[in-house]
Image (tube, rainbow, N blue to C red):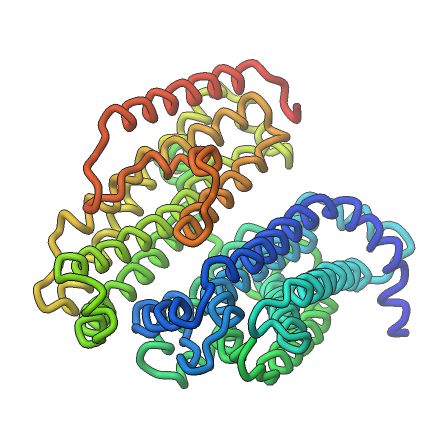
Length: 534
């Protein structure tokens, strides 16, 4: 009887692999490629023990612990430890997002689009679709584990032994399995694909925030988060394996529960129903702005709250950062007092850059919801009425444009309020607010690029996500890897001055705004002229 539930799983696996193989391949290529490139660069950056100790000391402070996890013992610091300290957590987050997006797409998205009904009309078992998704998840994370482990073993830098390389690969692979299982579980509770994606990605952010707070103030709190387990392996030093076991067991439990819940629920429903709303729509809801706001408000509010909490959490530990570097003789001798102040500002600049990239992800996803509406043939309901294409696109565009400013304001506010409580001398409002709003032109450029592709080449819209990933890579690793100048200039963030450290170059910003206007206009023209699904 149980075997009948999984009948046809092999065939469904082939279908899903054909549908999602290219996207998963791009994710794996980016994650594995970047990890191995950075690992190969580290031995050339830290050529002696003094360099490693200097890096270890800078990673010892609470602010860096909150961002990247607890530091390694300085007396056992190796090139491998430096690599893991800076790369492990963010790579684990990328792996978690990859798995969450795939599982959400291959479960609830396929239900909403009607593909699941076509599959179930064939002689396949009720759980075959979910089992097929699980097999692909195993294959993807298994490849990640295998290729990354072999690659790090071949690089064989200081501390990168065979066991340590296997542990690093296993950490990322099992982390992917855990978050895939978590998303499958959420997919049974949520009643729409939109809510599944929002809750799964939101949970990744919440777990990161819990770990960050726990790593600074309470280790027991950090251990609640699976991301807290990931950074407690001391990989490349003591090589502790219990987090891998925990992640693997957690993934198994979540998957078993999800299979049971999936068997119980009906197609296109969730075990937890959404609020049904009012019987009659308000006058505002009947307008394009009201409808789009109603559809997207949960995502926008969720991103705004999350980024406010993250910026406030880092603002709350800036005082510890200032105190720590003031008390460390090595840093005190290396930097002057003025340089010490710049060090604090440099951390704020890096934080603002990273959070602004998250803002770009949030606002770009809103514009691309129009592509999803088109793909699922719901957009025809708009244009069967007296509503122009440009009016709908303009509404999505303006909501995204407005919220890019709102989210940046909230990021600055969170940092400013929390930092004023933690820093002895307080934080000037201009450092926080100018530091956040200086990236608004870059956000508008990325939004314009998304609009251009949506109007001219909708099938190439994934290029925007690759561009954002490139920007994050250049921003995060630019201080470590000597990227070619042409590669740095591909990122729009390269042309944004690092306020308050650098002065504003108004000419570059004006050119950036001009490019933004041009891409936007071309995008609107293209969208108004092209056929749907082309």
